Image 1 (cartoon, helix red, strand yellow):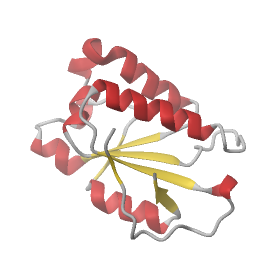
Image 2 (cartoon, rainbow, N blue to C red):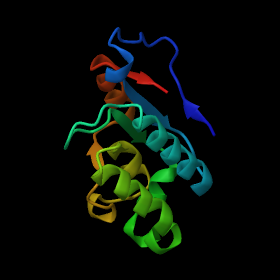
Image 3 (cartoon, rainbow, N blue to C red):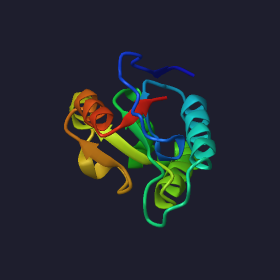
Length: 137
């Protein structure tokens, strides 16, 4: 599984229970994405539960894997999309999709499920999250 990590990003000094994690998604197969979601779910179990608050795990998609989340591909990737939706609705993860990459792939906002958040530019969103205390995982 290949997830980008920026080792130059300074880790926050918050206690471990308050850490927030960032996955810069550069994975391209259903199996790799599924493994990453399972890893995020496992990691979330180390957090103290806070109702209606995300566990502090953000996934930023900005590659061909965005296609897996389109409505036209739902039947093909149903278990993966349902798992991602379940993790999002139970506040385990937040999935963010790069609009710039969407535009390059001719994917419209209404092509994606409602649980994904569309951000203008994935790398800028990653920088913003790091400034907020997220660390690459």
